[in-house]
Length: 215
Image (cartoon, rainbow, N blue to C red):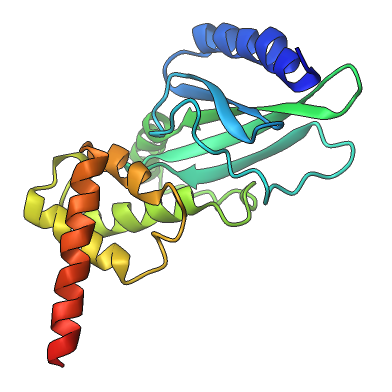
Protein backbone atom coordinates (compact mmCIF):
# COMPACT_ATOMS: atom_id res chain seq x y z
CA UNK A 1 0.00 0.00 0.00
CA UNK A 2 1.54 3.34 -1.04
CA UNK A 3 1.63 6.46 1.12
CA UNK A 4 -1.45 8.09 -0.40
CA UNK A 5 -3.59 4.96 -0.23
CA UNK A 6 -2.47 4.35 3.35
CA UNK A 7 -3.45 7.87 4.43
CA UNK A 8 -6.83 7.64 2.70
CA UNK A 9 -7.67 4.20 4.08
CA UNK A 10 -6.25 4.41 7.60
CA UNK A 11 -6.59 8.10 8.44
CA UNK A 12 -8.96 10.05 6.19
CA UNK A 13 -11.85 7.54 5.96
CA UNK A 14 -12.02 6.74 9.71
CA UNK A 15 -11.82 10.49 10.42
CA UNK A 16 -14.67 11.16 7.98
CA UNK A 17 -16.84 8.43 9.49
CA UNK A 18 -16.24 9.63 13.05
CA UNK A 19 -16.90 13.31 12.35
CA UNK A 20 -19.95 12.45 10.24
CA UNK A 21 -21.51 10.66 13.21
CA UNK A 22 -20.61 13.54 15.53
CA UNK A 23 -21.67 16.46 13.30
CA UNK A 24 -24.76 14.96 11.67
CA UNK A 25 -26.29 15.09 8.21
CA UNK A 26 -25.80 18.86 7.73
CA UNK A 27 -22.10 18.25 7.12
CA UNK A 28 -20.85 16.51 3.99
CA UNK A 29 -17.32 15.13 4.24
CA UNK A 30 -15.44 14.42 1.03
CA UNK A 31 -12.07 12.65 0.99
CA UNK A 32 -9.90 13.34 -2.06
CA UNK A 33 -6.89 11.23 -2.99
CA UNK A 34 -4.10 13.51 -4.12
CA UNK A 35 -2.37 10.60 -5.88
CA UNK A 36 -5.29 9.88 -8.21
CA UNK A 37 -7.05 13.26 -7.95
CA UNK A 38 -10.37 11.50 -7.48
CA UNK A 39 -13.03 11.43 -4.79
CA UNK A 40 -12.11 8.46 -2.59
CA UNK A 41 -14.92 8.60 -0.02
CA UNK A 42 -18.02 10.64 0.89
CA UNK A 43 -20.16 10.88 4.01
CA UNK A 44 -23.61 12.52 3.87
CA UNK A 45 -23.41 13.30 0.13
CA UNK A 46 -25.52 16.30 -0.84
CA UNK A 47 -23.29 17.88 -3.50
CA UNK A 48 -24.19 15.30 -6.19
CA UNK A 49 -20.59 14.09 -6.37
CA UNK A 50 -19.78 10.39 -6.23
CA UNK A 51 -16.85 8.17 -5.32
CA UNK A 52 -14.52 8.00 -8.31
CA UNK A 53 -15.42 11.45 -9.63
CA UNK A 54 -12.47 13.64 -10.65
CA UNK A 55 -11.41 15.98 -7.86
CA UNK A 56 -10.11 18.77 -10.13
CA UNK A 57 -7.38 19.55 -7.64
CA UNK A 58 -4.82 20.58 -10.25
CA UNK A 59 -5.85 24.21 -9.79
CA UNK A 60 -5.69 24.05 -6.01
CA UNK A 61 -3.26 26.62 -4.65
CA UNK A 62 -1.19 24.56 -2.22
CA UNK A 63 1.45 26.51 -0.39
CA UNK A 64 4.28 24.84 1.45
CA UNK A 65 3.34 24.29 5.06
CA UNK A 66 -0.41 24.70 4.58
CA UNK A 67 -2.42 22.25 6.64
CA UNK A 68 -5.86 23.94 6.62
CA UNK A 69 -7.50 25.56 3.60
CA UNK A 70 -10.48 27.86 4.12
CA UNK A 71 -13.05 28.44 5.39
CA UNK A 72 -14.88 29.74 2.33
CA UNK A 73 -18.45 29.80 1.04
CA UNK A 74 -19.87 28.13 -2.06
CA UNK A 75 -23.30 27.57 -3.61
CA UNK A 76 -24.64 24.02 -3.80
CA UNK A 77 -26.57 22.75 -6.85
CA UNK A 78 -29.91 23.42 -5.11
CA UNK A 79 -29.04 26.99 -4.09
CA UNK A 80 -28.07 26.26 -0.51
CA UNK A 81 -25.05 28.13 0.82
CA UNK A 82 -22.28 25.80 1.95
CA UNK A 83 -19.36 26.78 4.18
CA UNK A 84 -16.32 24.62 3.51
CA UNK A 85 -12.96 23.98 5.09
CA UNK A 86 -10.33 21.43 4.10
CA UNK A 87 -7.55 19.63 5.95
CA UNK A 88 -4.39 18.50 4.16
CA UNK A 89 -3.39 15.04 5.36
CA UNK A 90 0.22 13.96 4.95
CA UNK A 91 1.94 10.59 4.94
CA UNK A 92 4.97 9.53 6.96
CA UNK A 93 7.13 11.26 4.36
CA UNK A 94 5.43 14.58 5.27
CA UNK A 95 4.10 14.97 1.74
CA UNK A 96 0.38 15.80 1.15
CA UNK A 97 -1.47 12.56 0.39
CA UNK A 98 -5.16 13.33 0.87
CA UNK A 99 -7.58 16.18 1.35
CA UNK A 100 -10.52 15.97 3.75
CA UNK A 101 -13.16 18.57 2.84
CA UNK A 102 -15.93 19.47 5.28
CA UNK A 103 -18.98 21.11 3.69
CA UNK A 104 -21.44 22.57 6.19
CA UNK A 105 -24.98 23.34 4.99
CA UNK A 106 -25.80 26.82 6.31
CA UNK A 107 -29.41 26.92 5.11
CA UNK A 108 -31.00 26.36 8.55
CA UNK A 109 -28.69 28.87 10.21
CA UNK A 110 -29.23 31.45 7.45
CA UNK A 111 -33.00 31.05 7.70
CA UNK A 112 -32.78 31.75 11.43
CA UNK A 113 -30.39 34.64 10.81
CA UNK A 114 -32.71 36.19 8.23
CA UNK A 115 -35.63 35.91 10.64
CA UNK A 116 -33.63 37.64 13.37
CA UNK A 117 -32.40 40.28 10.90
CA UNK A 118 -35.97 41.03 9.91
CA UNK A 119 -36.83 41.58 13.55
CA UNK A 120 -33.83 43.62 14.73
CA UNK A 121 -32.53 45.12 11.48
CA UNK A 122 -29.00 43.80 11.89
CA UNK A 123 -26.72 44.23 8.84
CA UNK A 124 -26.14 41.16 6.69
CA UNK A 125 -22.65 39.73 7.10
CA UNK A 126 -20.35 40.17 4.08
CA UNK A 127 -19.37 37.22 1.91
CA UNK A 128 -16.60 34.96 3.06
CA UNK A 129 -13.02 34.85 1.78
CA UNK A 130 -11.93 33.77 -1.69
CA UNK A 131 -12.91 30.24 -2.64
CA UNK A 132 -10.46 27.37 -2.47
CA UNK A 133 -10.70 26.39 -6.12
CA UNK A 134 -9.68 29.10 -8.55
CA UNK A 135 -11.93 27.89 -11.37
CA UNK A 136 -14.34 25.30 -9.99
CA UNK A 137 -16.71 24.42 -12.84
CA UNK A 138 -19.03 22.62 -10.41
CA UNK A 139 -19.54 25.94 -8.61
CA UNK A 140 -20.14 27.78 -11.88
CA UNK A 141 -22.60 25.14 -13.08
CA UNK A 142 -24.42 25.20 -9.73
CA UNK A 143 -24.77 28.98 -9.86
CA UNK A 144 -25.95 28.90 -13.48
CA UNK A 145 -28.63 26.28 -12.80
CA UNK A 146 -29.75 27.92 -9.54
CA UNK A 147 -30.03 31.35 -11.19
CA UNK A 148 -31.81 29.89 -14.25
CA UNK A 149 -34.36 28.05 -12.07
CA UNK A 150 -34.90 31.12 -9.89
CA UNK A 151 -35.60 33.27 -12.96
CA UNK A 152 -38.05 30.69 -14.30
CA UNK A 153 -39.55 29.97 -10.87
CA UNK A 154 -38.62 26.29 -11.26
CA UNK A 155 -36.98 23.60 -9.14
CA UNK A 156 -33.94 21.83 -10.59
CA UNK A 157 -35.10 18.37 -9.54
CA UNK A 158 -38.65 18.73 -10.91
CA UNK A 159 -38.07 20.25 -14.35
CA UNK A 160 -40.32 19.06 -17.16
CA UNK A 161 -38.78 17.70 -20.38
CA UNK A 162 -39.33 21.02 -22.16
CA UNK A 163 -37.89 22.98 -19.21
CA UNK A 164 -34.85 20.73 -19.18
CA UNK A 165 -34.29 21.26 -22.89
CA UNK A 166 -34.57 25.04 -22.46
CA UNK A 167 -32.01 24.90 -19.66
CA UNK A 168 -29.61 22.79 -21.70
CA UNK A 169 -30.03 25.12 -24.67
CA UNK A 170 -28.99 28.05 -22.47
CA UNK A 171 -26.05 26.07 -21.08
CA UNK A 172 -24.94 25.38 -24.66
CA UNK A 173 -24.66 29.14 -25.17
CA UNK A 174 -21.88 29.17 -22.56
CA UNK A 175 -18.68 27.16 -22.13
CA UNK A 176 -20.30 25.13 -19.37
CA UNK A 177 -19.97 21.81 -21.23
CA UNK A 178 -16.27 22.04 -21.98
CA UNK A 179 -15.43 19.86 -18.97
CA UNK A 180 -15.31 16.13 -19.68
CA UNK A 181 -17.82 15.11 -16.99
CA UNK A 182 -20.15 18.13 -17.18
CA UNK A 183 -23.05 16.27 -18.81
CA UNK A 184 -22.91 13.50 -16.20
CA UNK A 185 -22.90 16.05 -13.41
CA UNK A 186 -25.89 17.90 -14.90
CA UNK A 187 -27.74 14.58 -15.11
CA UNK A 188 -27.20 14.02 -11.40
CA UNK A 189 -28.29 17.53 -10.49
CA UNK A 190 -31.47 17.26 -12.57
CA UNK A 191 -32.21 13.72 -11.39
CA UNK A 192 -32.23 12.09 -14.82
CA UNK A 193 -30.03 9.56 -16.59
CA UNK A 194 -26.90 10.47 -18.51
CA UNK A 195 -28.51 9.03 -21.64
CA UNK A 196 -31.40 11.47 -21.24
CA UNK A 197 -29.03 14.43 -21.00
CA UNK A 198 -26.97 13.24 -23.97
CA UNK A 199 -30.12 12.82 -26.08
CA UNK A 200 -31.44 16.24 -25.04
CA UNK A 201 -28.09 17.86 -25.83
CA UNK A 202 -28.01 16.17 -29.23
CA UNK A 203 -31.49 17.50 -29.99
CA UNK A 204 -30.59 20.96 -28.71
CA UNK A 205 -27.46 21.11 -30.87
CA UNK A 206 -29.43 20.07 -33.95
CA UNK A 207 -32.03 22.72 -33.18
CA UNK A 208 -29.35 25.41 -32.85
CA UNK A 209 -27.74 24.36 -36.14
CA UNK A 210 -31.15 24.49 -37.88
CA UNK A 211 -31.92 27.93 -36.46
CA UNK A 212 -28.47 29.22 -37.42
CA UNK A 213 -28.77 27.93 -40.98
CA UNK A 214 -32.01 29.86 -41.51
CA UNK A 215 -30.52 33.17 -40.44
